[in-house]
Image (cartoon, each protein chain N blue to C red):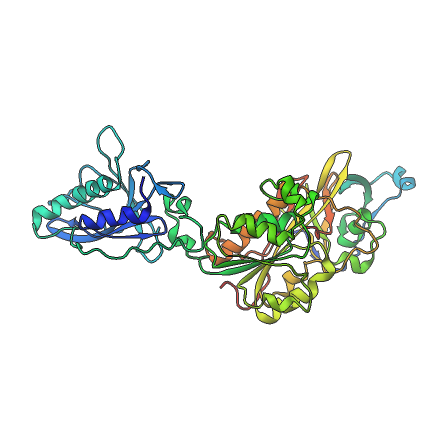
Length: 104
Length: 394
């Protein structure tokens, strides 16, 4: 897994997704989570924030087995898996796939 | 047309020392010149072309050769046969072989007697010139011919024509289990039924229903669906057509039934109910049995279906990989969908079988398999190396 821009840190990255009312703010990026666009302010995002964007009612416990992948990310780690406790630097247009891969 | 055993007997009656291994004729003790004035011996390997279990006329004129590069008496390269020097083992238990290419001008060989006698004559002529006593026809006693096709109902000619016998030996004789015969599990069965496994055990207590037919390989008939058989019985009956040792177990896998997995070498875990996995995973960990867990998470939107399919290889003791397997159910419906498509089931199954065969050594490996995730909308496969563990590879 490419992880040169991922960090072993708390899952609460300093960035946050904006509500609709916030989008007049001047500096935000657009990220795509499971096919839906979200405005995002900040430089990094972690699994917890992504899980809440994908599944608004998810609990903390429910996040642990989620599979999180990203693409169109920063140079040197433009794609990869986002493991537990990791964050990635966010670029405008970065895409994320967040799913509980449990169907067979 | 003849059967393979008749073919071997015919060659033995001509005096050749021949055996039939994995759909390949192995002619032993064939003389040739390995260096100027120096006679050696090698084995000639000839894959049989077959149709409907019967031997047909050769369709190709290449053979495999375990000796060195054949020479003329003076050490010059042998005329009449081209040699492809890159060698590899192509029949289990036999030395690395190089490919030879020779033929009768203007046509293919009529039969395997002409095939073998032509190659033996071309290879051996310089050797006989150096020593008239050498011959490949040294065995004139009739010997019983082994007719065992292994676990298969008929000879695996796909492997013999590609000379994969030695690599097939990496999975041969093993016993695997498939827990869950939904879309992914049934495709796993489709793939592993073509491997020379000693046995394939199926575990599922569900009935084959109409929707099942649209996520499974092959084409279940309306009569299959009206029969209301268990999935394990339906699929065992279908796949015994090619692999004779498919064993059905119509049970739901839980702590009580998990010991049924104890005799297995490897398990494919392909069930929807994440909450049912812990007792299975615990049992496999206790018994030191490696497994692949396969699962997908898809969503539908105006832009089409997206999501990911995950294939996780868990070696005994690898808690890092085991932690990636969902083990809690979705009773609240947070994740909402149960979308599956047969092509993604098939891909999930193929990735699972590839991970297992790479672990066995059938496929080359530049890294230790761990977790792989295919993201549908990106068309990208992400791979995470396995964590440290004990007892890797069998």
